[in-house]
Length: 257
Image 1 (cartoon, one colour):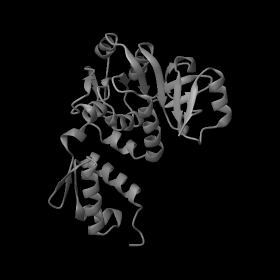
Image 2 (cartoon, one colour):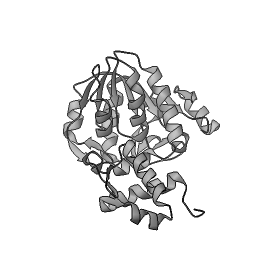
Image 3 (cartoon, helix red, strand yellow):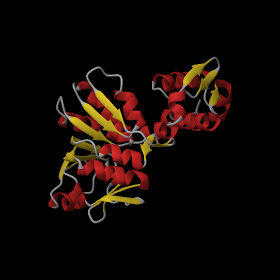
Image 4 (cartoon, helix red, strand yellow):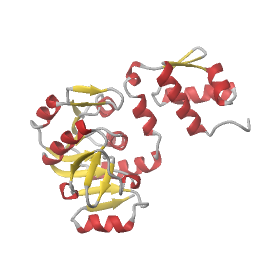
């Protein structure tokens, strides 16, 4: 049909309806989105394969796993190609046997997916999605930090989480952030997570930021640290060259994908 939405936009709308109502019907979506029944069925099949929903006769429902992270699932689809390339580069830096701190975020989630090619990895994380992704691997040891849960964004936080991190040391702190600025440094939308990120950075041999170029020049709500708190930043080649130069002059290694 001429008025069908593009696939990505249509599937994002399906996820929004699923998050709101807890279930979706093929006939309802066909009418709302101006797509054929066959197209909607194909969308639901694809979303089930990606773990976003469970198919039912005539529609789909939220899975218990994704009841807590549909917002996270929606954000995973934004700039997916950039994030996957950055994630692959980060995973290439990790060696078998390393210990990692990993915070919550869509790019760190994709990094976790790429890490499956490694062996004998220890992962300490406050990301529920990362823990689920890696928890079943036979050569991985995964520690999910227990505490309060931010259900919308799929992470744990609080004093208990901070106390637990202080028990460990790591080779890498692999962190996703919401803002990177040569002057202000690293920032995040969630104040409760900025303190967790700082402890991970302090207790890791190499703090590593995975963030695409849209985060450069952006300042979010809560400051994590200055740029002198990190060693490596992996990003894409769309990053503003003048700001990148300022960051590299401060001693940060910038890796482009």
